[in-house]
Length: 122
Image (cartoon, rainbow, N blue to C red; front, side, top):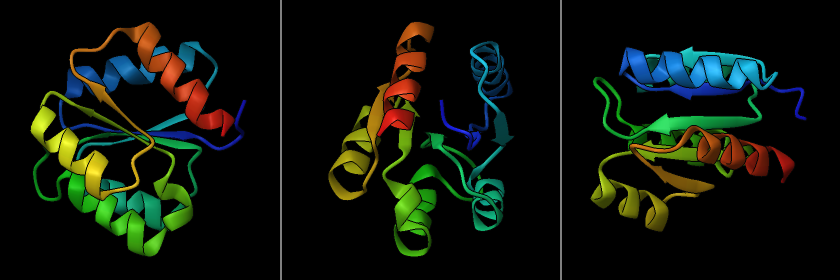
């Protein structure tokens, strides 16, 4: 298991809290951000084993976070799991950005855990 924390980025409090709880129950260290701006601040200061990233958020969206990672933290960019209900945006992210995988919302919690494990294993 990675010693680096998982960063959960989602503006939906219920989803963010649920994902945090599930990952903590699986013994992962977890931090969170409410939007892309807060995520970029955290990513500028810390390393994460993986990033669970929503695409549609206020201030800075998920694509903005992916652009930041691509230019400023390329070693972290491949550790992103995009969580989104916006399949068009997910297709764009998968085509143009180095996201590890796309996890469509709504998702099964087992599926989420599996993606995190796979991402941390690489």
